[in-house]
Image (cartoon, rainbow, N blue to C red):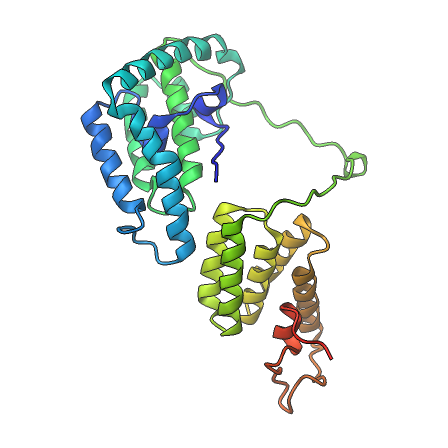
Length: 306
């Protein structure tokens, strides 16, 4: 698994190790080491507080692919000296391109024009770093925010002055002039596939709460997995959360208009809306679906057909 960032200092083909660890650009090594030990303890499989296997695996990926490599860049004095030189050269680069830099977060915009930018930087960074690895579904977004904060701070430190805020977005062309996009099938992430299989087992046992937890965890690895969204829609439907079910089904079909599970849940939602839930050959006298592959559950997971 690889993680890609396009915000802040990352956009200059630079890995912002400070943002990954949640430390300031001026941090001493002692502070960096203390921060690393705290984050590593939270993300390590043996000590992490996360309950679902998907969350534990994602935390472990964050530790091995992001946090530990970032710390390694500070652990040796020679590497720290090299990083200092790279940052110094980078400050010249961003200074030269300051007219093209556009900030998206309010904190970065504030640092870009505030008089007391140093205190604002420290306070905002502390608030973000406190949340950075608390809820790992927000971690990647927060790393991007911290890196943008670092970019604004670096610009001010180099004396480049105020950076202009982002201009308003360009109006989109009328919908009839937009060319249709072709949906390309994506390679299934094995971790996502495993999470979906676990969710199916939980659904078969009618444990929808844990199934939802597994599916949400899977979406941290791949946000655009249509099957995950379709299964979430089914879970919400079974919990009588119609609005949430519709949102997930709509998302699944936007990613793959032919997603079978999403189409089946959409049909169930339409039947529920019209009250068309008449007993069929696969239902009992009281309308309870059979557990032998037919009905609601069998339709969702492709039960045995007669």
